[in-house]
Length: 428
Image (cartoon, rainbow, N blue to C red; front, side, top):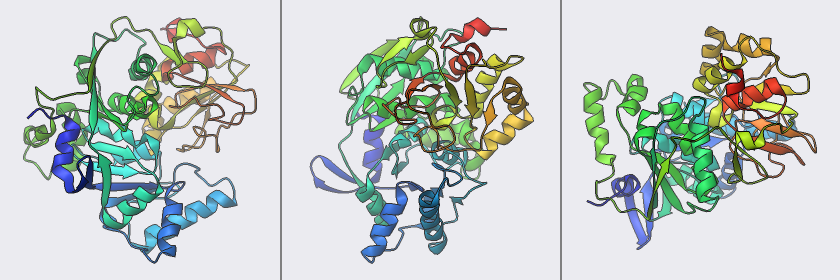
């Protein structure tokens, strides 16, 4: 008893304990993309260890620069592509079938409650929305994971954030997580798991929960995590229906990973969002957060809607509702990147792509490129972007560029106005 979700997952996966504070965990999955995995592949080859622990549990995608923008990024894709083929990795998503990793892999049913998984990507914490322990790791840990299917972690301390109240109209999961980061700071959860709980989380769908968990790392968190419930089961049901007699049976099985009523947390924070307004960042830290009203009138050059934070179908629906029947300002350019081919197809079927194009948006293929300043939306020195991405570091989307993080609704409204503005201005 007295255990958090993370502690229960650790207990269920521990295969060794070399030190009282170090746990070696069995991995359920290792996720890979073409930026961080090729160095691990090359190093393993050079050391005569070109092997994988289980090709069925390694999931691979080319997503960060898609398609390749130059010979260097083409080589990265080639290394990953050849490696996946060489080892018979079936779940490899190449150009055309690929999508942003942290949207694509959940969409494929690769994440389950109680899982442990790693990836050489800081926003791997996204997958904790399913009640999994998911962490971004460095090259050495990634190599061990690929080779042995294990990874070492320190004993998980958990920060519990209890989100209460009712969200106002025009306020979304992105606003909630920005407000939390603004409250606890970029180091507020360093080396901790953030367990998101409370009635607001319970009312969120899986896509909103993924937005919450995605930005846990921006507060220093190792992983964001939500308790698995019927919402989780319903999302996963197409993938697990052959494993359980009914959704209730699946929920009962996953309930073993629920936190105990007397679980011990390093800290519990009650976060009331009843009066929370739409939020946006300023400056170059994710905890530089203001209400959008305080940012109103700030001019921007580019609007970007997409990424592993807010490129899912619900995000596109929110933005398109604001944009319907309107045009973007002549003073800005606007880009939307559906996070996966399935999202793109759904947006086409629902007429959302037409709404974006009629409004003056450039619609791109699924890619991470703009978010980290590599392709498909890089900023020039001195330019400003209103973005639904997750990181506003100096030069993040291009050397000398400024990024203001916000929800899809606020980004869409900003595209129309040409300056940062509350989406309520374009209600109806």
